[in-house]
Amino acid sequence: MSEKKLAIIATKGTLDWAYPPLILGSTAAALGYEVEIFCTFYGLQLLRKKMDLKVTSLGNPGMPMPMPMPVMVQALPGMQSMMTMMMKQKMKSKGVAGLEELRELCIEAEVRLVACQMTVDLFDFSTSDFIDGIEYGGAATFFEFAGESDITLFV
Image (cartoon, rainbow, N blue to C red; front, side, top):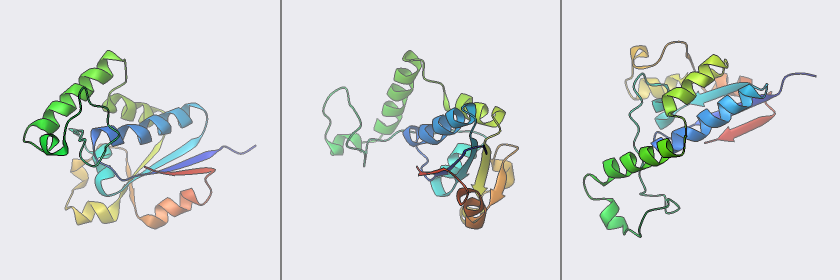
């Protein structure tokens, strides 16, 4: 029986959206899947040396808040930092692994991390902005792997 494959496209660069591809990728690898996470546009933040990601409730009405908060209040200066701090504290209190730890689990499990070269160029990033050991490629690189995958996720 051939090894199962999971292809993930990571497109978001916020704290809450960084978790799904790293959790799913590391878990699938632990279950024996061959995994590729293709990071494009804001998903490139998952591969940056310093992941200083923020959480935002704007555009995410499903985010549980300690108390109902109008969108206007959520948009005030400092609210994003406050919500990020609250989310990180909540995750720590519940024993949720940090993003750097999850990314390291992916690396140890040989998850293939691919930065979209077109997006790297678009945002004027340099390879020195990213962690070591990742690959660079375009849509064709993704399709080469995803075309043979058992599961493909867009996150």
